[in-house]
Image 1 (cartoon, rainbow, N blue to C red):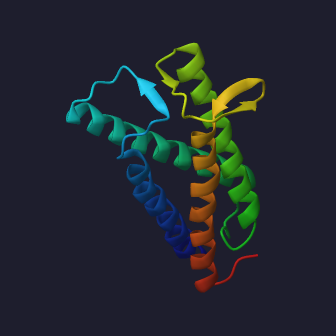
Image 2 (image 1 turned 135 degrees about the vertical axis):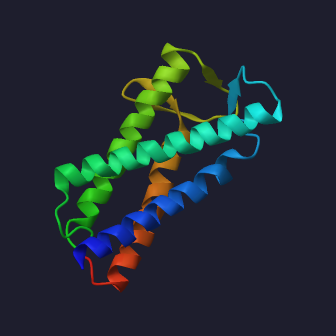
Length: 154
C-alpha cells in the first residue's frame, strides 16, 4: 500500500506542474525581454522548453528532498519536511538560473514591468521566485489531500 500511495501522490504533483506551466507561459509576458523572434514556432519552442525545464527542476528538487528526508512511508510521514525542502531547492535553483541567464550570460533581461527583489545580494525577478513558492505549495496541498484520502498524513 505505501508504494501505491507514493505513486498516486507523485503523479498528482507532476500533473499539476505540467498543467500549470504552459498556462503561465502561453501568453505574452511584459516582464521579460529577449532576442527571441515573434514567429509562432519560436514562441511554441519557448513554451515547451520552459515548461519541460520547470518540470525537470520540480522532479529534481523533489527527488533530492526525498533522498535527504523521505522514507518508504512518504507521503504519510515527513510530508511537510519533504515539501519544504523541495520548495527551498526549487527556489535555490531558480535563483541560480536567473542569475546565470540574466546577469552572467545576459540571454534575456527583465523589462521595466518585472518587480525585482534582492536575494543574496542579487536583484532577481519576483515572478519566477513566486512561481516556485505558489505552484509547488498548491501541488503539495493537492498531494497531501490525496494522501489523506488514501491513508493519512502525519
